Image (cartoon, rainbow, N blue to C red; front, side, top):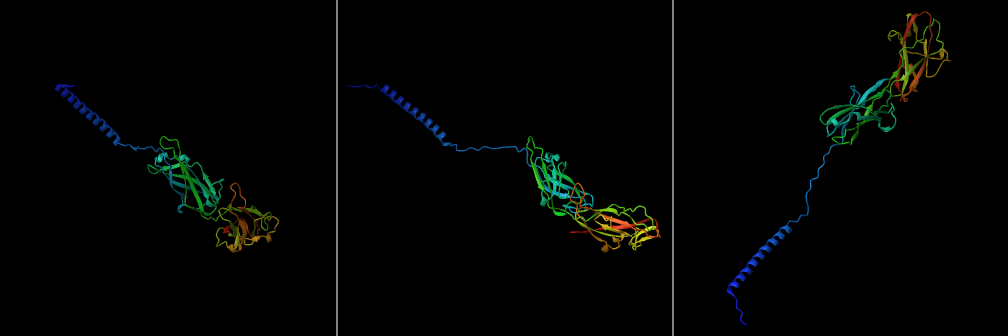
Length: 336
């Protein structure tokens, strides 16, 4: 059998095949190129920025110093006999949110003897509190100085182990309701020793005649005006000038009452003791040591062993008249 092929048709067929091949090459080239690009960019991690706005930070108490406004150095308290010494516990406070973020009404402090701690009831011997200080002064844009004041009693225990603990909280920063706080203690504070005696200024025997002796002894109280136990000494002289009155117990408008006519007994009621059995008021301290101990005060509400009584009698000799005055020196010697 004979097959006849038309040359023109063959040429067209060949051209079709070539065109189809070219199109196939182009298609597969584009497809595989696309697949190659996607597969080459492997994403195995990504970076994320984390962000927060700190609207409040803790206030930071950087120092606490105690000052009694005297010439004594800082952190030293010199007491005042039979009275109070006002001291200030000063705290320097830094706050990143600014000085205005410190709440002055929240400031409070405790002045206390370290060995007995800051907890418990207030006691004038060893623990003081101020829970509403409210005194703050702006120092810089981020720093304030706040103070808490205390009226320290004359019988506060002498020791070098007092501390002042200061606490404060802030206003909550910016748009925050969380109030943050800080608390810090001072270095050791010294309350110095105070040896002091306290009496009234007049021992009055009233009206007496010559040759007459005081009947019932006149009581005269003596109290401890400091923070240490004391022993009492007594001596005296006539009038107000010791040199001229050394041999007298009283100087009168007319004549003098000599030593030996004014006598005392310390510590207990000697109403039944006769005049000659009582102690003579000498003009020498060494002879006037009474051996009467008056204790440091320990009771905040009343006086106990910190007050004791001496009892006095006077005998009027002949040859004197008018108003008579004498000086009695009540002395204190440390008892412990």
